[in-house]
Image 1 (cartoon, rainbow, N blue to C red):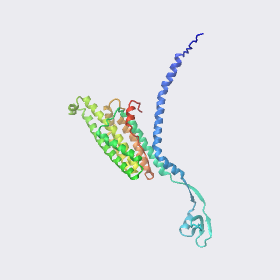
Image 2: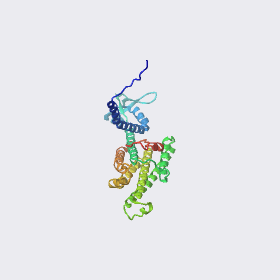
Image 3: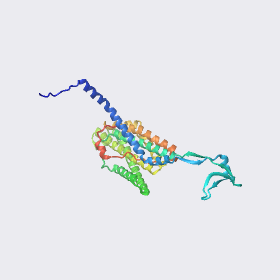
Image 4: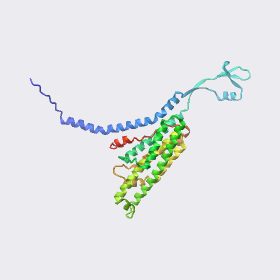
Length: 344
């Protein structure tokens, strides 16, 4: 007897509904993956603060003698003295009359919480720094560069600053760590200023490119070619400048130089507000390739919002601060592989 192959036919409506459900669910899945990735990044940034927090919480309470103001005054003027152990001379929580030596009172003992302000402030600033790092990472997506021209001399300083910062984080010797952080800071600051000046120059050249008599036209060809060349330069400089700024403030935070950190963030905020926000941001974004997603507008709004939060936090908590922060590291190979990925 021949075996017949059983064929099961599902209604078209059943297949289409399942596929339709999967298609609708896909954006939500991608959103959840991005949120999970951001959460992991935020938690990772706090790992350096965990030992400090655990140590502080572990000894977060201490036993103290509950002394009233009246008793404190009598101890201060010598009327009362603490009893002492005969073998060690160690003071105990019993007060005696200084003249007669008679027992006066036994002091009650209570538990008091220790000050956790330093630990909480450190973790808080680290989280604020991570928020800026996240927004700079989103800015990178809005610039939407497929490849970076890593052979450019202007970016060599940023790469060197990154390498020294990473070595400083891994170095155990305090003096070497400090020296590497200072070098990283110096190179990041130099690179940021160089790239900023080039961004100013590109901005002015874009304005000049509107002029039909502009000599740049003869240098690069047609007006559209001139603006395309300048727009590419603007993207280069913005892309590299944000990385330089990231390592500049990370080095200052790791060095514990909070006044300098406050100044660096405030200075960055002012130059963006004065020269790369509002109409300036719209003008620059308007000349960029369609693949970019208004990075200057994002810089002048979202990144500055986080910068303001850092400034306010430093102003309110500086006396408590001891922070460890690792910025978003730049993985060049992964960036090239993921260049086609969807950006937030």
